[in-house]
Amino acid sequence: MHSELSADFSGKKNEFETVAARTAINGASREATLPSTRNLLSRDNPFAITTMIGGTNLRVCISHEGSEEPLKDGGSIKWQELNAQLAPRLKELLIDFGDAHHIAMPVIAKHYVDFIAAQFDKDGGPPPFDKVTSCNFSVAGVVRGEGLDATVSTTNTGLRLTNDKIALTLLSAIQNELAARDWPAIPQDNISVVNDAAAATYGQVYLGGLQGVKNGLFVIIGTGVGSMGWSDGKLNHNFDELGHRIIFDTHKKQSILLGGAELNEKIDTDGSFKNLPVHQRYAENVLAGPWAAISFVKSLEVKPEVMSALAERIAPTLQKLNPSVEKSLEEIEAELYELADLQFKNRTRWAVSSNSHLVRAVNDFLMTPNPDKIFEYLPCDFSITDVTSHDPDKALVLLGFAAWKNYFKNIGLFIGRAYNGMHESCQTAEKIVIGGGIGEAANRFPPLLRQVSLGLIHQFAKIPDGIVDFTRISAEAAECALSYKSVVDARAAQGATRNGLGSSIERTH
Image (cartoon, rainbow, N blue to C red; front, top):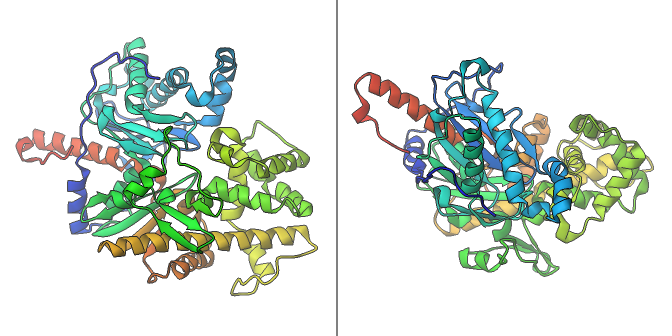
């Protein structure tokens, strides 16, 4: 459901490919710079806004000329928390949270405006929303069209989106909020809506691991699995949505890569992906973090002592994630059993159907194994010949590390099918970058475990060493690259105009 616009909007096509092609040619290497302290932004300088809409939350980020890393602290709204906040009203109106767009958007808009306003000196007058150089949306879903007319379909977010004009809807609410405060409106001439993998691919080409690459691939593995190919200086949509294009078939013991028409046949009328036969799984339903966590917990149902050990292990993480709620080990263990029993159909709606803090805590245990325990319990080659133990803690470590190794083996099988697909189309990937939660977690591995994980990926992908690496820049820096570039371009144009060179600046946005 969409509210009416209070202002006249128009979208504009983004022409990043032209700039990215030049970057790939000169191959200039750049590293993201993290700000050392939080400073208020200057009202005289341009800035840009990126709204990242994902499986766990909606994040608002601000790009400015001081850093390639956007301002993000405090800009996040978790779907589960928003659901809890709106629950009394939704219950009264008999509306499911997934369909409550018209109720949720004004609340999101207020948070959006408050977060941006907090970055400026409150005594200097209204925040300069009229200096926004671009307003970009990065969405974990299928995007069709451009600008404000772009539609999004996904079931991977808290609010269900089926051919929804999400930018139009949210910007309408934001402009209404600004008008109510008598603050300047956001300019309408540079708005883009892109799939999150596409946005992050631009970032990898401009700032990260795909710099200077003619043909490459970026893969997001986190709460979902997304991807985008990069060929001859442009996005290659033949290798997008690999989380559903690639299907693991246990009967044939192989993976299948769907073409565009075959992929469209798998999409249901509500934008979700159709169920597969029991012997087949979409790659996303094997590799996505929530699925990996639930599968591991389910494997412990017949090992109650190990399940208790897991509850004890993740308790400190849960406390950090949600300090206001203190739970006993018995309560955590009970929730683990509930997670193990989560029905298949609800796993696709895990962000509102399950305890997201619990899922994250289990993933934290699985994806960042304790090296001291591994070195204590396993030989130097990390081979696992027996996962049984009378010590529940040791059994947990062995079972967890076995799951960790199997997980990266599956990533290798997934990457191998994608690599072969690009090779078959005469666009062999020179580099493949893995981002998302898994990519960032891998950067916290000790060097030896990082080497093991990359070794497993290359081994089971059956590709030359060195092709695959984990992202070296944050998800926010990658997905906000379009916004950051618009700020850089705006500042360059200002400088050129002051020097009388405005007519010579190539306009890329």
